[in-house]
Length: 386
Ligand code: C2E
Ligand code: MG
Ligand code: MG
Image (tube, rainbow, N blue to C red; front, top):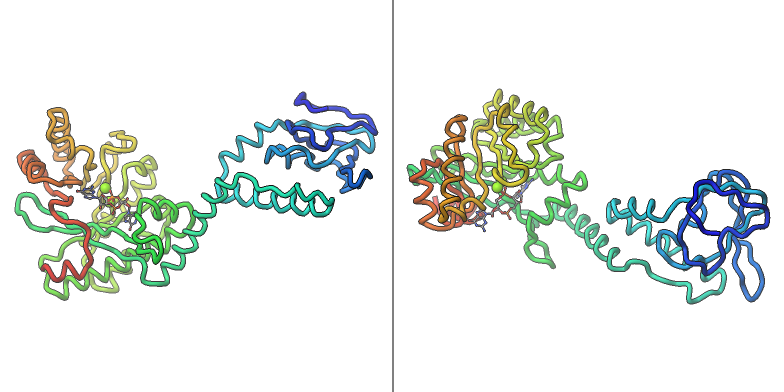
């Protein structure tokens, strides 16, 4: 009997499911005892007994393989059927690494069972594609952990130009991972991975320390006025209550003015207004600046700007690309007006052409960042140029 009607009463001796049946349902044993057996060389071999509270028949429901054993009631039983969709939904929503671990254990168990029962064909691999993806991810994570200890992570500086004076006012710190086999891994790939684990905290601390050391180096080389360096912080870092204190400690240890360090918070993180509001207050009290990154993407909700007092707004490069169209130009003009009205400075990202820069200048925009101004380069290149 395989059905998903709630609570089934099974009489002693009745078969619940048989070996080789197609799986549709797992069961929770509410009362009674169940025997799990298989046929080996024509004889019944008992694999185990299950009692109240145990899950029955879940393996085949998870990996969709035919039942590898027969379940029969040893005494009168009450079972609650669990539909395969209930598992499927949760499995689909689970972390791919957790899913791969479960599947790997299931494959290993089936293989052990096959050896035990002499069924050589029983060995099978489940969702190999999914596993490869999940294990790639976990491998990359281990490698990133190791990269932190070696010299594979590099912080590059991307110049930000003051449009009116045509001078470099500051830089955005952008991390790079020079992987020994994969070559350069994009931060879009590994920052997300680092965020899924607590690895983002040491990665963020590494960037913070490097940025502060870079400011010291720029000061030593006579870069005056000292440019600011903006650093990107991610969701987990924002939740760290010690973030601002850690930044201030790094600055104080090197005798650096706090207004030379800027934090960039991407627009999609701003939904947590209480958290960001608190961070803004603390940064402002300490003299640090905060920029709203990638403005115009993500939620594009203006609500947070009612209360959150950002120092700078960074307009996403999508708008820069649209500057040569009337609608794009109109939108950027309106955003510049909004930013001025709020007392914010505006940095426009992704400026690649002279025409774009000229258009931004005409609109009264404060800063430009993009390939036209300069690509992300090493500190050495900045020092050599200055
Ligand atoms: P973001 O903060 O919006 O950084 C700007 C990205 O746009 C950078 O990519 C930059 O190289 C690219 N870009 C700037 N100007 C141009 C241009 O004119 N044309 C084109 N095609 N691209 C341009 P990148 O370095 O790959 O960084 C991607 C994202 O990774 C960053 O977006 C940021 O969200 C994240 N990220 C980078 N470094 C860090 C870090 O140290 N910590 C954290 N939490 N995130 C980081
Ligand atoms: Mg940024
Ligand atoms: Mg950005």
